[in-house]
Image (tube, rainbow, N blue to C red):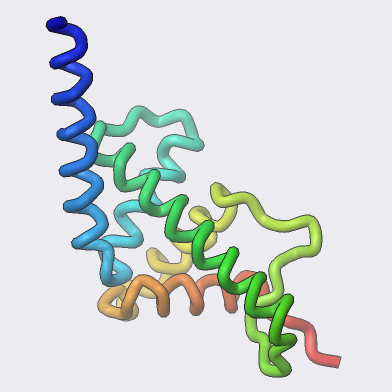
Length: 131
């Protein structure tokens, strides 16, 4: 019974942490912190439990962003498409590295929304070639 109570408490803690991260993930500052945690983990650096939660949020955010971008492209064939991911795709870790690098290279843009930061960073890394 004691183990079950600990598991429930751990799940409640994780949910509360995730809620706090989700509420705070509105600008490039928060996105940089979250995606930097992904890069740290991928590089084999130990991260705190809070950073693990932030990393999960970054990966989910990037996955949702690129999924919606692909669906829009597939169904609506936008003429002014600005982001063209490689045909073989890009891993969420690669996308986190792109976003992290762009945000570190553009500190004056950290006040922008998370979605604008992702858009600008991916547009820079994966521009569409115009014919």
